[in-house]
Image 1 (tube, rainbow, N blue to C red):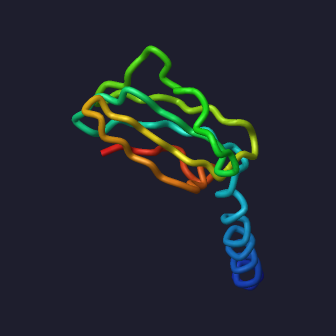
Image 2 (cartoon, helix red, strand yellow):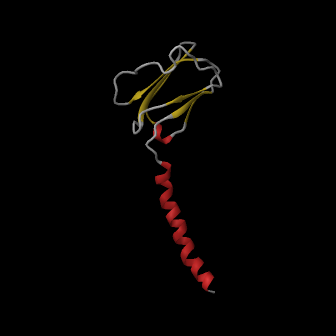
Image 3 (cartoon, one colour):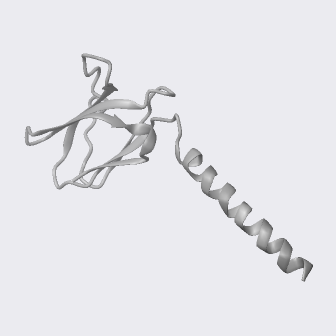
Length: 111
């Protein structure tokens, strides 16, 4: 009888504390992520810069390319969560996405 009473009081409080902790655990200040080339086209250039910058900065691939099926890890300064992305494919097409909260993602898939 005592155990049942204890469980009725303790379990709801335990579940509530887990529910309240979950959103905090999901947020991070690490903006680094994996860029996955899931398209059928080679990626020749990758640019990622803070949304506050007016310039794209250097090509993160340099002399390399990102073949279909390959992954590139993009390392960004801690806390730089809101970023602009630009990917240029071998066929000349470009993909741009502005104000991406990279602290909320671990992967960005190019398809």
